[in-house]
Length: 120
Length: 500
Image: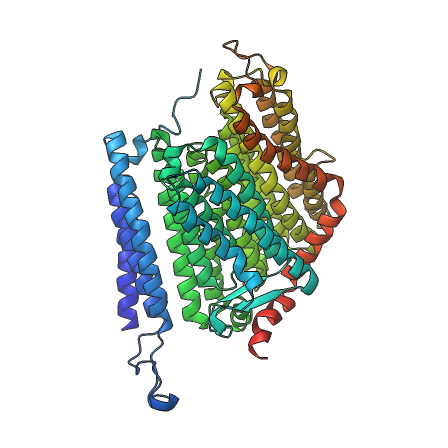
């Protein structure tokens, strides 16, 4: 199971790199989304995918009988997903603004802050 | 939980909420300044406590380390928190003159304060994942600040800044997640033992490299710095001043912390890479600056070359070198922020930041010219200013190791720094204004004059004081370096409390 998730994560990262290298801001953002999902899966796999009991104490604080699942990677993931969502929303808004400002999304042609021509 | 540790983080966020609620009135500006004063008081209390008791740690919510989130302050952290508060207050006052009601209504002061809160949190946390969260807090605030002017060039700069920083963040997250998978802990003090005891040292080095790339991108080291000169000259001057002073230094701090506390198992590999990276950072930064003709662009490239010195101190890893890195970090934040603030005043007076289109400041604004000389020469390393001692210690440390090449590069970069500073001096201050304008400080409205000049004078005085009385600061940095190189006290403060 872990191997499968690891392979999926690798596939997502590979796809995202291909997308991010394309030079179009929108494709870059899709790549970024896939990249963060790939990393999230990797964290999930790194926390071991074991079929364990929920990590909850029974009545009077008794420990559950079986091995417990590790809840921490999932807590980390949740945090990362929420943060990633916020950042992605900002990046998307910025992209829309960039499109309205420049009329295109080719990053190679965005040279206002760094003009290609040096002064004579 | 210790309030001394929590307050420096809490105050900026409370201020941010206040400033956001009051953003439509002048009270929002005042809330920002008031909150910055409170932060400064909290930071002074914290550093007094650290000087008195050594490393202090607090467990949030009473969850014992290594299970809960720990806040830790050693000499380095406390000093960084103090300097953040000083820069925060200076720029908050300076912003009053630059930030108009439009930017204030869009939440400038709230974003500014949450940026300071994020930076402070990153300096105080003792937990790797929590460090990631603080990075995100300061990152999203910085995104907002970058685009708040709404100019075309700012959007352009922001596209590059946002995308590259997001990749660095994802790498950091992946490194932290894999490290947890391999060791089962995220507490930095606990990680030291766990990483050393790991059977798979190759995996540890791999994770170390992931974190090095992530922090290196934040710190803008070669070859990961391209977002910085693309964006730092585009936003409001107050914004670029606080970015220049603090943001890249958070990356340097993270490198210093992680590569002295956690990843010290394979120094021959990790620190050798850091050494070459630092040399190339110094050289590319200073050569990039030489090719520029914009006040802020020159300063931006110099951030990069100066970052190289700090990383060099870490790479050499001797007590003297790490002490140099700590001292350099503290001195540089003050100097760099001040130079950007001066660039802001110069732009306001002369109407441009293009060095070929401005001039005449020496004749008509001699005070500004004198104030420029102090941080500019300190940056280049002239005695007796603070930068001289910083460079002296780093060069001395490399000579002690017999690293002639390293010392040579460090001295050469200092020389080239003078070249750039002289260029700014000659163009902006010495020659007459090409349009025959007579830019004078008296042109500014009375209140703006005070709001702009008082922070600049205060920061310049600090630079002079550090240079004139270096022994106290060097002693402090020595203590900080000792704690970094022998983190027994740090580990005991974090984990010992749990076993009480």
